[in-house]
Image 1 (cartoon, rainbow, N blue to C red):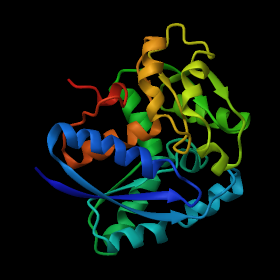
Image 2: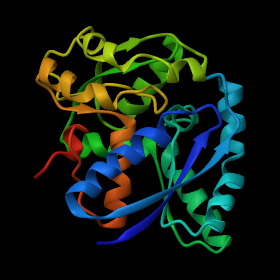
Image 3: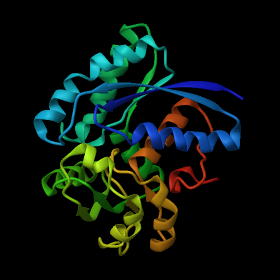
Length: 248
């Protein structure tokens, strides 16, 4: 049995990652006995728009310093679109910059991101073609699709729910997601990204969506949890959390 301290860098209006990531790791704990505590630092962002996302990214260093003071073992930057809006492969530079910032403030820790974890997770599954569901306005959905495609993964189809208020995204009903996920063209895709947004609740919908579609389901919260566990060298298994966290 081991105990681990997890840091989360989250938008101020996010109400989902601090629910879903701890729940996924609690399910891992049930199987392994590993223990986790969670410590968050927030960056101001309410509306999912370019200026707010840029301002949040500019504030990420301050948030990383705060988590460095808590001596966490891994930090996860839990806003997918904030990173993807900065240009293709932006997660690599942002993760490296925040890792350096944490080290300079006395915490030698790996910083991972939901954006990087999603891409890495899809590659881990061998997914070369996906369909995605997002809560974003259509231009942001196109940006996310382009980012994923720049990583060598074709986005065959996308659904945009067109909600730009981040608190409202957190109130969307996950019970609707299996029906919504059946909307895009999933012929010949290797996986479905059920929620290409860390704020859109989706964990409870994963089993029903997998059963309905007969396809691997990936979400940013599940991918982030998977990446956290991999970074810590722990078993990447949790019940009901999708393809990345299934038992081997």
